[in-house]
Every structure is written in structure tokens, then in C-alpha cells.
Length: 326
Image 1 (spheres, rainbow, N blue to C red):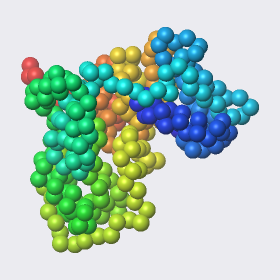
Image 2: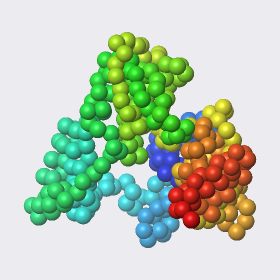
Image 3: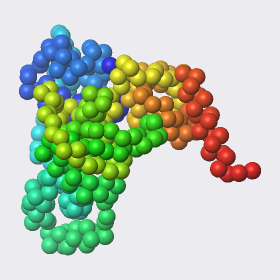
Image 4: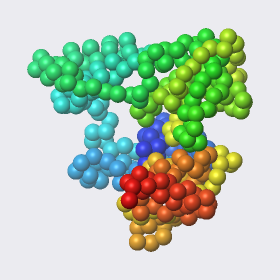
């Protein structure tokens, strides 16, 4: 199983804990099958849970997690974790301000429900707190990608009406403009950008497209049928990029200052090289995509394999230096 970013692992553990507790000490095999883990990965998650709890972190405040007799056991401390969480005034104001900003974003179908929830939250605040939230909301602007509302509305309508589109799309991996016909299936937001899930008719494959990279979209006059096995939830899971066996295998050595690459790249494996250095193994469809990350990391990241990766980094660095002239 590829190494998962910290955020993804945390989400899995947060789902696994209540599931294990509801099942009543399930067998290790059942937990591993349910969450796609090896026994070693499950043991690592349990070890992490053992050091989690609430301040002041006395034995009665810690989560009791263990694997005994081939079964997974998780017990919550009896102190405070079983009580409903309550927001402080500052937290409520922050949530209200953020929620109002998100509600103003274009193309969100859940906006009416969100505004209803925000109204209930505002009613629970003190008059002073509600006034503070209103003042802050007027001074905050939130951007979610650069996709225009007209493009989002057009794509949503095409997906709803099963209308095939002809689009001009900037492929960041290839660094070129491409033209293709697609069958739009789903529009969703993630990681600060809008995405379109669609069938690339030429490749006969379902792909994700960044909406802000679609230069134009026109209906072809044809309609399509949604693939019988299409699962919208599967295409909205993070990380959004999932390596395939056809991708190029790459190896990169990173210094501690570039360890952040572990969180943004979908890794197959990593190993320690000593002195805090790591060797990362991953796959990618297009080298230019990986080159951009290595350029950001600078001297703290060294391309090892394939040779074409080092050549691409060297060429990109030379082109950057050339911009500075003599």
C-alpha cells in the first residue's frame, strides 16, 4: 500500500475508531479488510491511538487501544470524550464568518442548507458576537479556484442533461493545449479548486479535469449514457491523483527541508538515508508535473531515476536562469 499523507491517515483513523467500537472488538483480519490495511499498518495506527487523549494526559484521559488475541480493542476515556463538543465564542464566530464566505462561492448546490445552518448558529451567539461576525464577514473575501460562475453553470447543466462537450483544455502535465470531446459526469470542489469528472471519449477513460484549465466548452449536439459502474464518491476521494501501473517510476532524494514533498506526492515507498534524508519512490504520468515540485524544493531535492527526470530538471533550471540574462 502506498504511503499515505498525514491528513489522509488521520481521516481513516477517525472513521476506524467508531467503526471498531461499534463492532465490539472485531478480528484483525476484518478491520484490515474493511480499511484496506496490512496487519503492520493497522498495528501502527493502534500505536498512534495509544498516545492520543485529552489534557492533562493522565491514564484516565488517554484512549485505550490495543490488539489482543487477534482482536482490535478501542476504549474511550470516561472523562470528557463522550460529551458533545461545544464551541467557544471565538470558534463560533470563526465558523460563522467562514461559512458565510463559502456560501457566497458560485456553483454550490448546498448553499440554501448552509445558509440555514448559519442562521441557527448566528441565533445562538450573543448580540455582540453576532455583530463581530457580521463585521468580519464584510471584510473577508474567499476565492475557490479561478473558474467563472458561467463555466461552472455550463458544466453542471451539461452533466445534468448528459450533453457531450467539445473542450479546449490546458494539460499541465504536458504543458500544452489539448482539444477533446468529453462526457461530463460530475462537478465538485476540492483542495481549493473546482474539478470536472468526465469520460474522455478518445481515451475511453474517466478522468478528472481542473475546471480553471478549461478554456472553452461547447455542446456537440450528442448525448451520452452514464457508465453503469460510475461511482461519484470514488472520484472525490483524496488524494485526487491515483498512480497507475502504466505511469513512469521515479526516485527522488530529499533533505529534511523538502520533507513536505511526502505530503503532496502520492508515494509508493520511502526509505531513510540517514541524517534526516529520505528516498521517495513514486509514479507519474508526466515528468513536467514532478519537475515543478522539484524546482520549488531546489537543492533540497535530488532527482535519481529515471535519467530523463534529472535532464528535465536541469533543462528547466537552465531556462529559468536564462530569464535573468547575463
